[in-house]
Length: 316
Image (cartoon, rainbow, N blue to C red; front, side, top):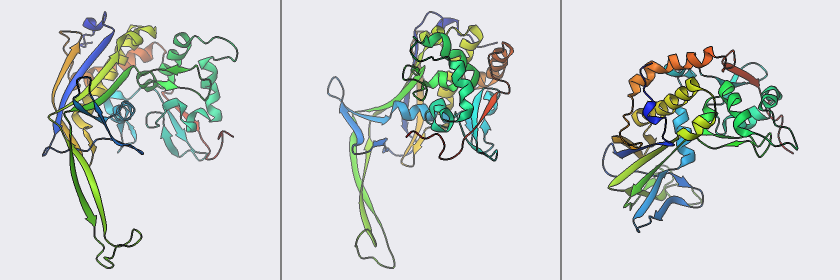
């Protein structure tokens, strides 16, 4: 194993900052929220700030880089990791725990009859205190390691079964300025404007900013608190770093009008730590995966199939 995580052994966090910029021009489009639009706010010193990408959206994007959409499988470096595949009653693939927004708490997983076995292994009993760190991490490692990285709230079982994200991220822009523009949808047959038909004129809001920064926070203390052993800890750190570096290399086209480049990536904590390269991680990850598998920590087969029937198991 060539990955050296020794400098991280006494640090509670690994903090990274990536400086981003539009690949062309100066404008970009941030994430928007219903009934709110763009999230504009003032920083502590009064600097006009803009939330370009939220924590919840970044979690989805960091998961997405693990999946090969063409071959409908994990990317090559991550093959062998456990996850849950959802199939219908005919055996047709429906979705999986990597793509589902709430991972194991997806209604297509947690409300399936086939989830009962996993629920029993999680070991929650009504009316008894639940030791989260003792019981939950080994089960998540066994069936869906991504739930250890990105967190899970198994409210379908009990409200106390809640694990925060080990890896969190967001993107902010500093001294953001609004760029007002617009356009028109042209109807060449009936150009009159009536009830949404014909020509439709619309406004458009984009932004420009001298500084756009992506922040990544890897909670090393929480990984150690899982008590899963050295091999599993190394795998979790390597997997998290793979997600970050892969996202910065291939996942920065956030929207049609928000295509960014990573100009610089630095470690802000702990001081002096040098990140491995993406190529080094891709080389080492298969060995780390098999080292944990050799300890009997993963489900066999690695992909656990759960059947979901449309309309079944909905809450009344």
